[in-house]
Length: 367
Image (tube, rainbow, N blue to C red; front, side, top):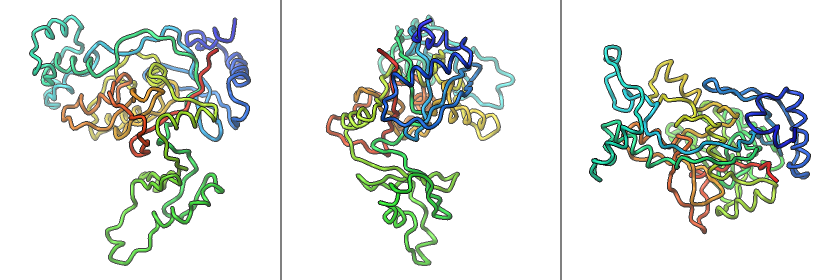
């Protein structure tokens, strides 16, 4: 069996660890540029809602990547409206009365189409009905399609645009862990920003800034739960400049098809973690958040803050979104859908703000 047949998703699942390792060695030989340093290779199991994938995590130039098998017949996009979602969450029913109430759990395309014919334009997005919600979902997701998606090495965590990860600085001890030499060149300015000299009065109201950007030098993001900052090198780039810079390193951005397959992992769900949208402050809500914020079925971690776009190869196609002003649950949550279409355009001469944009490197396995 040829290499490209073995790395097809349907066949990859059947391979033994020995066979997978042999495939990987060939892929590394032919597709990873010689200048890229490989420092770690590990077989890892990923699972979400019963969908399992045993694949490789690889450290390339100090950054984690996962290997994603190819799929010659990937089904992408969405046209099923609210089908599969929980009507009582979408329609804001009183949770205390749910036990005494029965709800239809799905909405068929036939029901949506028959109602859409008589909806007036101003009622197109009547988010008080399942029909209106379904129309809204279909209009804000990419079209249903079949695509050939190549195998890929994809960066596990997306980075703020124009940055490279340097390390972590502890806000309690001030200790830095990471690329010490690169950090040393901007250490003084970083310490002035996050450890300022304050008067007794100023110290009562001062708090750590969420982000600090010194253009073309460094970028910091505060991690409250860990009481530390992620430290990044920064260069101001337009979209084309960023893509050129990472191509020179041997990487590229994902296309929209590649992004949707990598994030959705081939599952036919509107949301990769399942159908739950209402995140209550209880054990159930916490478990849903863990699934949302954890690795997907291919091992990727996707930002759920809804305050940034993730870039693709096309500046006219960005995934995820900045939080909308919509008050309805579906307006708030749909940007986290694998198939969400933001319609956000990055202008050719626009410098990418790391607080607004993310990017994810990839190496495409294709002839």
